[in-house]
Structures are given as structure tokens and as C-alpha cells.
Amino acid sequence: MSGESARGDGATRTATVRTTHADAALVAAALAPDETDSMATRVDGDAIECAVERPTTGGLRSTVDDHVVNLRVADRIVERARAHLAADDGGRRSDTNGDTTNT
Image (cartoon, rainbow, N blue to C red; front, side):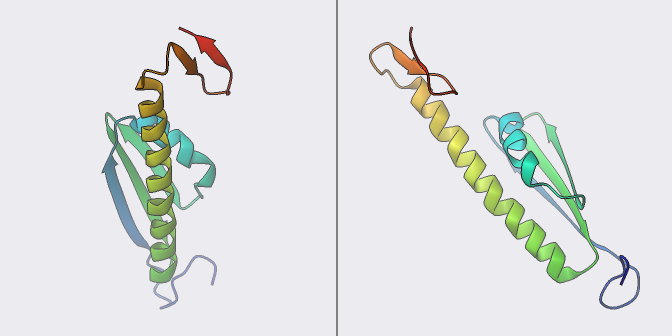
């Protein structure tokens, strides 16, 4: 099919997903390894905007669905990490590589 839609009209299907996050840059960075050539993601303040372009409606739906699932997981991990770091744990905090330091 060489980039053409299943209908044969050469048109592509597009969708844009825009979400807001407490740490949008970190969430977007967590998503980067799973992005494909059909996706373009940018961060604007507390928002992540991902534009997806696919040749078929089914492909668009699958890509957007995967992106939303990955977004939810990344956002939950970032939020839990922030809550963990903010919690008073007796003056000890774990940094991102698992080492524990006294504060």
C-alpha cells in the first residue's frame, strides 16, 4: 500500500492528544522510547501534546490507545515518585538510582 489508506485515497488520519501534568517534561521524557515515526510530541508548560498521523483509522486508533495507556502509566509513576520524595521519611531520601542519602 506504500503509505496509502485502506480506502486507496492516499489520505491520512490524524489525531492530537493534549494532556496536562504536574511535571510534563518528565512524563514526556518517559514516553519518548515508545514513540514511533508517526508521532510528534511537544511539551508546552504543563501540557503534553502528541500529534499522530496514520494511513488507516484502525492504525490511528491503536497508536492513540497505546499513547494514552503509556501516558497514564508514566504520569502515575511520576506522581508517586513526587509523593515519595515529599514524604517525611525520617530525614532519609532515595534518589533516582536507588541510593539512599541523609538530608
